[in-house]
Image (tube, rainbow, N blue to C red; front, top):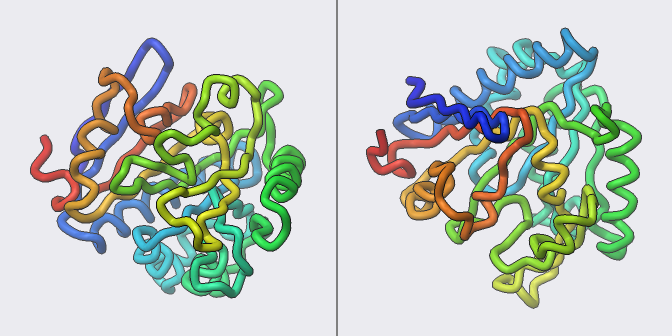
Length: 261
């Protein structure tokens, strides 16, 4: 069911929250939301630009979208696929976000164009190259590339994309830079190779028309309460995701929301 809708007149933010019983319900709800936004984007602009995230949470959604029942409901022939973030590993590495999405979804659907981040070169160079790619292939609005949908997740520590608590990419000077992508280090993962990551910046994420979050499991409950409180002071990176004039949608299971009404 639709749990709630909230509009913030100060920044034009539209928040919707949906609660489902389990991960399968979350995936089904998210698939419907994604298909609807794809249809709208293709109707209005002739293309649907979608950025995918890694982690285990979206895998159930990926597997659902490739089924015969859902494949025809998303206009893959007019969809351009990008990534929210990527680990600095080869595409066939078990930690690769591209590798997981390709194995579970993209190899099974006829997506028009697929633009992975390069995790095998210097991450700073990769971030610069990906920013140029975004400017070339994501239609701009008022001079800013604007994704139609960014599929996002949240860590138990409140991080989102590869924007971690205390990240230099969230420092005031970084937020003022106007950069679309950057190089992040997940300190708690060091010294593993996947601790080095390329990520969309807050600027690029907040330019999206729709930020679609998936949250499952009890571990998400503590940061989720803060993420859904639009009036709470921002102490976690996820609280900084406020798409300008766009939609912020959370689809969560009962374990994550803990009976939140």
